[in-house]
Length: 155
Image 1 (cartoon, rainbow, N blue to C red):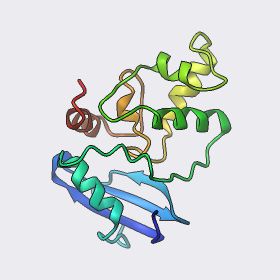
Image 2: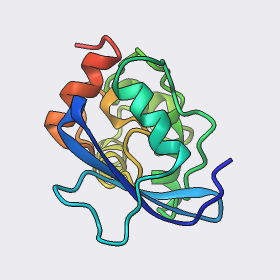
Image 3: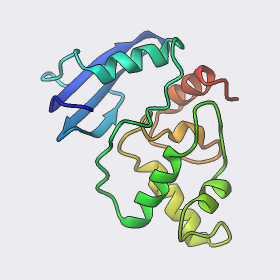
């Protein structure tokens, strides 16, 4: 369980970036990859320790237990919840993700656009692993996606 509310950030060599997380009410609100973290951000948080182990490939962590506060439209929420069901080390395409998502059809252009929008607007990359969606846009920067996919053995 995440307890400390605030902004936390740490630089991670494997992705050559900072990862910044916003936390409140025991939930992750946002994950970003800033060049320079927020001046108020501190480096000490258990999730950053877990990210360190994951990014150094010392631990296979799907972050399934991390609670994310999703304040997005219902259809997008269902998509992002489906993304969280894609396990560590597995990649799927947009069509498969759409089929996995309740109430959406992979044959409907509007539904496919809903999926793409949800991925682009993902508030918590890594914890909602859009890097596991092989042919979709995501909120994770492309160079970070490449590194995350390498860590998980995805190509």
